[in-house]
Length: 383
Ligand SMILES: Nc1ncnc2c1ncn2[C@@H]1O[C@H](COP(=O)(O)OP(=O)(O)OP(=O)(O)O)[C@@H](O)[C@H]1O
Ligand SMILES: [Mg+2]
Image: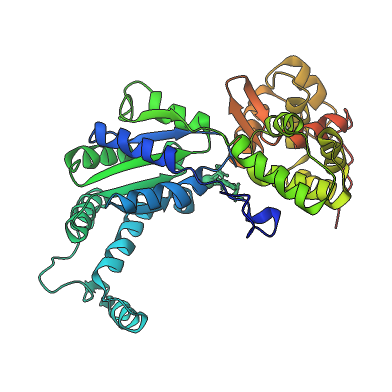
């Protein structure tokens, strides 16, 4: 399917996961009112799946998929969701054709001494409620009615709800709307922070507890590696990538398809077929080193020290780490400083929390940090 003749570059390799999408839709059907929460590390293809597989499958089943990235409006995630719903409603209400749509959206909100009037809505419709929760309820109902079918809410980066002050009440609101309107709406959540998602779902007493069904989102496998190898073979007549080597490498880099594709592209540029060597070259390339140095220079010396300690496998809150951090000039290392640094680094995506504890999110970056040894400073500033 992917290694067809029309494929021109490594970038065109795409894996469709229709079977997984159908499986999820069946699960949603089987338990009305209960959302699915997809667990998976960063960069493994969650958003891509929502966009390219789940949304089309939902459409084909007569549903109306609505996507909202809650991270985009970290301070007001529920407003972000409502905004996505309003846009979907607009799309349904406005007559087709760009001109008509423009004319209609232009008159949609006219500020009248501070109050806004919804001229764009159908005349018989009342204005939407101000409160986000009521608004969510009203929007979901209107959308489903207008569409004459169920709405599928796809809430990406849902762990954001765990990080905002009134997150718990937002989850409660979401939960009650999903339950009350279960005939009209169903939902799939994804989150890249396993820790955040787990905290959100499993804190006893929190409204999400036992509410969503938590699912391990499956990593890509041979169905992605095979077309990569096939394309490599097409570009380099007589050379062949070994599947076992590719599998090891894919596992090593945490099943991140974009990273894997970059790696194979680099190997292709150099004509290298030994995947292990490919990784070594990649990790040492000027291009990659420049990216990692820039990444390191984007955090302060103390955070860099914490990163190196984590990369070396030291328990971050241990005496050994504090000892290492004494080498950072100008800061007296304390457990609480390490803790807030870890928090910050997790938020920025450099660290992630796994079953094994805190780790560097990008395994190749971890290798780079290990290789740098114990010298924490001074850093070469690339400018
Ligand atoms: N099924 C797929 N086929 C081909 N490439 C894919 C596929 N899924 C993901 N990718 C590649 O991996 C990249 C990262 O995927 P995506 O952004 O969906 O990950 P994510 O899990 O949502 O990451 P994050 O946690 O950072 O939001 C995509 O931009 C795409 O290049
Ligand atoms: Mg994503």
